[in-house]
Image (cartoon, rainbow, N blue to C red; front, side, top):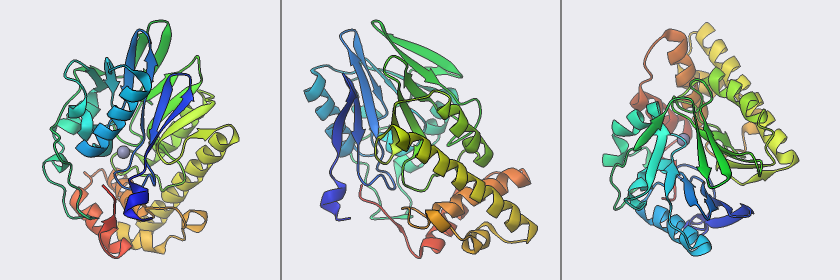
Length: 309
Ligand SMILES: [Zn+2]
């Protein structure tokens, strides 16, 4: 993908006044965001990694809706979804899960990105902006008579502080990074079995439209297909991890021993290394070493990981 193509991003109205901001190709640091708008207010779901990308999203949203965000929610702590928070109006009330807020509070990457990616991302004119309001399990936002249900999956999944935004009237589900549509899922700051369990939890909403954290919008039969791919991928990680530990392999060695099969063509295949680091850490009751995990992912990839931010 050329850099120009990677800069394309699109505001899609998935249901009346419910928008998704989709940034191709959905790879490292290229997230999706969105918003729910009514006459009573606007709730933004996530921002973007850089000031330029966050401004592009918020400007497009303002043009399409003629409104400014009254509320915003971060689906999780990762910088692609949160570093642009400071581009929201100062008057916007920002919501996040309790652990998400703490994660962003201590996140060192916003102060300077380590050279695991190429080019090394430049966030631009952003500053750390933390949620004003935190929740643990559930909060319902009422935009006039439209409900938006913010829900936590009940335990670690993509991260420890995930939230989804569910619009029951329209059956639209913003999953954050509990779904990577057509790209390799990433759970190194969450839990492999937790992420697997979260797939069933997501399916239980019976959504008609899914706005994933990365990758294209899903509708109809695509939703079940993509959720099934996640189940199969997480089971592959669990098997590879169990085999690796049994055979005394390091996470990197275990990753190299995996035949990715149907997932070999997905972008960001090196996440198998990061996901195995999470599996190993949990099995061994240890803290995950982020620097070691990313160094191994770069070794698996054969160089710094490509990005377009
Ligand atoms: Zn994420």
